[in-house]
Length: 58
Image 1 (cartoon, rainbow, N blue to C red):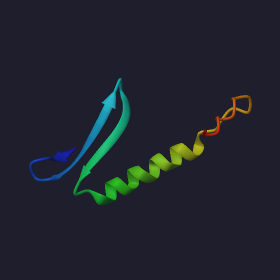
Image 2 (image 1 turned 135 degrees about the vertical axis):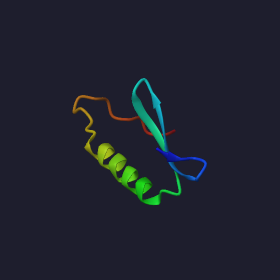
Image 3 (image 1 turned 180 degrees about the vertical axis):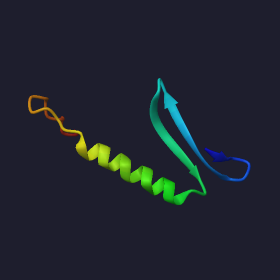
């Protein structure tokens, strides 16, 4: 979205229709909105009560 030549764009990386990453060129506000949305998605992920606990580092 935008113009790479004008150095004002958003590049979205997808695999199998799933959004994996975004890169922003001179679009700071878009980057902040995307970061907030990602943090909100991460915060809503819950771990199943019967899932094994993560192993502690050695």
